[in-house]
Amino acid sequence: DVKVTQSSRYLVKRTGEKVFLECVQDMDHENMFWYRQDPGLGLRLIYFSYDVKMKEKGDIPEGYSVSREKKERFSLILESASTNQTSMYLCASSRTSGSYTQYFGPGTRLTVL
Amino acid sequence: GESVGLHLPTLSVQEGDNSIINCAYSNSASDYFIWYKQESGKGPQFIIDIRSNMDKRQGQRVTVLLNKTVKHLSLQIAATQPGDSAVYFCAESDGSQGNLIFGKGTKLSVKP
Image (cartoon, rainbow over all chains, first blue to last red; front, side, top):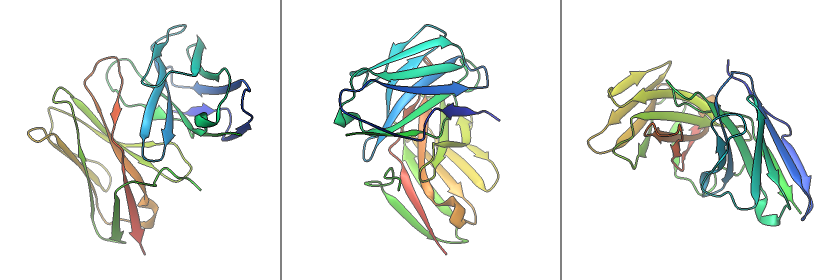
């Protein structure tokens, strides 16, 4: 079974703090994604990566950065957290060819106070 | 509790009945479609997929139908159970870059 894990299920941070969200997948997938999910807005793509050290902006990259130093790990960084970044953050991974199915982690519920 | 189900269309069915959840997709070039299930407090879970060269695919208690003429996708769940209560959403891909476009979702509520 594909397994995608995220470092925290729940996280509470203060405005201005630097926040790291970690994601690890164990299926040797090339692609990894970070989304945020908010009521009424669905899944919105923040950043994605097709390979180690490669990154591409998604639909809402502002206020975020990412790092992919190893194939299995994709980190999302909030340089200076703000209250409007309170959300559910979901990581996903997929293969480059064959199936485009993305497999999701359990999510991190981030609250910024 | 999980708030992902707020503001979504809701389908309420009786336990044991069949459920049909619909999705209209946007890109006529999309060639791959997926249905996901998201339970409260969890990440989306893959249910079933279908390629554009097919119009029907069956899994365990689930069937996906694809109508490319009207760009419509549906998920049928047979003998719906309380454990099927969740938000269901479709996703489409045109094969470029591996990105998916996700629908907003439908909340399925199963009454015992």
